[in-house]
Image (cartoon, rainbow, N blue to C red; front, side, top):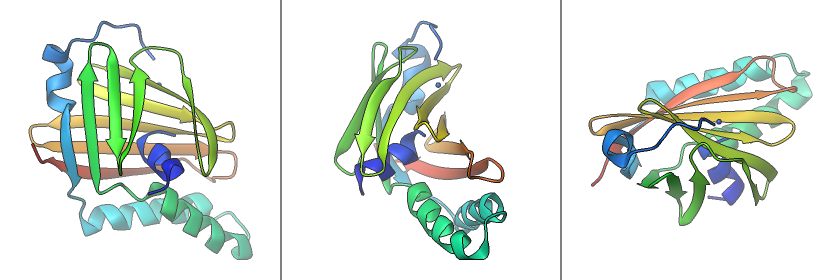
Length: 171
């Protein structure tokens, strides 16, 4: 997977709350494998259609294809936490962020984005601002399942694009 797609899956957020692996990280820190259903895939593609329906017909197909590629969830995710640092990895690449810290610049095939991470209770929120749009990924663990809710906004989208991917713990 290209780094930009990886980045877009993870992000496309910041509080100064103290981070404790014992309190928050245990649930999220793990290796995860995609366990998405056909309903999740259908919902993701319907969200793409809704967000692009305002475009002229000749641009709509191209926009749908681009968004389908950018929103395809990675097959595997790794989330690790050490102190106030979260590392999210997939496809041999990793992104390290300071929880509640300032955004860092990350770049890939699709350009650059300012990326930040924060915790809100048991939920990890990662946000990437590419200048033309924002992608927010919310990670929630419930036992051996991880839910990743992604919201993308941008001037070219008719409405926010929102979808969920589900993962199962492999460790």
